[in-house]
Every structure is written in C-alpha cells, then in structure tokens.
Image (cartoon, rainbow, N blue to C red; front, side, top):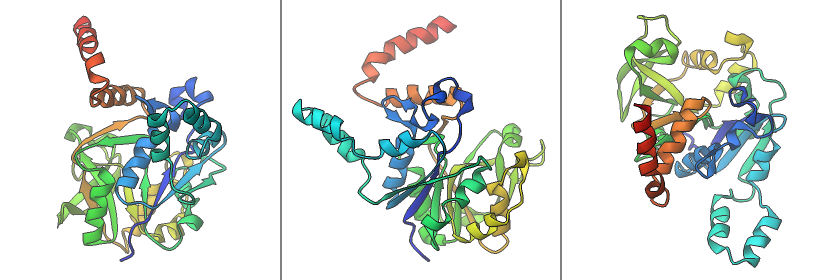
Length: 292
C-alpha cells in the first residue's frame, strides 16, 4: 500500500451563487474571518501529512496562485515596519518551494473532469481530493482521520456525515457494510436517491482518498447528470474492482459555496477566536434577540 502524499483541490468553479463579488474575486478567496476559504482546506490537508498540493484552476483564478507565493514588496514593507508577527504569519502559511502545482481545467465539464486534469501531476499513486467549498472543524481534522483509516484498511476512503433521514434525497448517500476500524465498508453509492429509498442517512461530505486507477476510468467516462463528467459515476465503476470505506466525520461542516453556510462559517470561526469572541458575543446576542 502506497502512502498518501498528494492532495487535489478543484478550484476552477465560477462561483455564480456569490455574484457580483465573484466577478472579480474567486469564491475560494472569499474570507472566513481573516483567511480565505481555500486556506482552511489546505491547512486541513497539511495537518494530515500531505506533501504536495495540486490546484485545478481556471480562467480568472491566477490570484489563488499568487496567494500561495511570496509577495516581495509586502514582506519588505512588513520588515521595514517591524511587523514581525504579520511577517511570521505569512511565512507559516506559505507552502515550501516546489510543493504546490497548478494546472488548468479549460472547460467546466464537471468534478470528474477536474480530477482527471490532475492525472499527470498525481501519477501512479493514491491521492486525496478536497472540495474547497467545504470547510470543517473538529477535534481531529477530517482528512487526518481519513488517512488513519486508510493506513489500516487501504483501498479508497470517503468521508461521510449523518443527515436527517427525511433529507437523504438531497445528497449522495452510501450504503453501510461491516465495521472497518473507525469506519465501515461502503456497499453502494446513490446520488440523490428517491425519497424513502436511501440505503442509509450517511452522505458524502466532500473529502475523498482515491486510488490512481480512477484516472483511467475518468478518461473514458461518459457525461452524466448536468451533461458533466461525474466523479460519482467513476467511483461506482472503480468500486467494482476495489474496496471503498467510509469515515464518519465527527465535527462541523460548513458549505461555503452557499450563502448561509458561508455566513455561519464566519460566525462560528469568529467565536472560536479569543481575540474576537469578546468583541462580538454581546452584539450577536442582541441581534438574535431583535429577530424574535
């Protein structure tokens, strides 16, 4: 079993739900408190031991590449003004030289196509896939827990969470098999099952560990829902030959691709900060009381 070293971040989406802001700013660069959304996801990957970060970008996303680079003028200004804390912060967030790669998805052909675009950079080894809209908070990072499970059982690992059974038709749902370490074997994957037919109430939440054979499948994958190349369709084919395990994530997940999830993420991560919580706790309570 090969170790997990690389992670793929599909960041080519247009972010139309956040227009007009995303006309000029990629949705992945919108800030939750004082860090871009993409930084939270990269931090999660780094915590899990990822060594190489692969970004699938698109037109207008050059600012993401600039963000993960040195900005000489800014750093010189901080040095001249003895802003050592700010300078250290920027240095700590910067990937080491050669550990970040960027490639283009020229057409918006779906998540499966975006993953396929990383094939030559990832090569013949397993990789993590993190959807950048989803930022997570828990005692243990989601991907770190997935890696621990992967190191025990191998194969492919998908992170899942529980939803209310009556809402299962809104998600990609997995079927539950026997226990595997801290997770369970996946018996089936169903995208948005009809009401009352879901095999469980565990939904896929945007974190994956996949074997490189998925690339060959995606290279010939026919377009599915939305006339796009769907990753789920590729995983279903891969499941015919390889095992899939589910890792139930115990924490909070915020969908920052939706306005409500983005706003809730800002509030949640702000109140986790000792320097911010005292400033906003009472005003938040007053705002909530005014809504009653």
